[in-house]
Length: 243
Image (cartoon, rainbow, N blue to C red; front, top):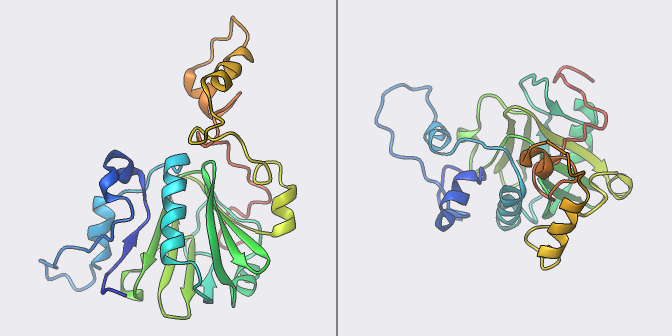
């Protein structure tokens, strides 16, 4: 593996410039003398986290498959910084016990969410809001604050930092299948099924006097798949100190 300081998964800048999809971002050489400032800050200044919607989820899932699929988890921490709108489904202790020894399976986009298979029997749901998802070649670039830290057996790391709100939910596979949001698949604008006739049909669901905005139409009702669906919180534990 090439020597890198971080691989950045925040994909919104890549949407504006498709040529940098999946690009490894190598921080600039250190030009200051402050001993506590990590190289990772150069990456974070250049690539801020944005709201994860369909394009971001598609890109991030592809990058995670390239970098993380097949890695085995050595340990994990359900974040080290309280965040009111980081949504979880289990206690800190359960996350650590469940993820230990799991194998990173395929990652797939699911609208504005990313479903990450934790083989053999769990699924980690990311996205649905503003998240900075980073792969680290060493612990030197791990951010000081995070809402999920995964340590792999090859001594590389994955961190998730929520900005605004976001999902870091852990489900058993049968729970996903029965979930009203994660268990259903809408018609993606990237698919052949998303035709003009299909889009026209969505408008026909509206009343003629409906004055709600196009934004509401896209993200709520009737809704475009991947247009930042409303975040289902399940059983959120809003504080990192909750157990």
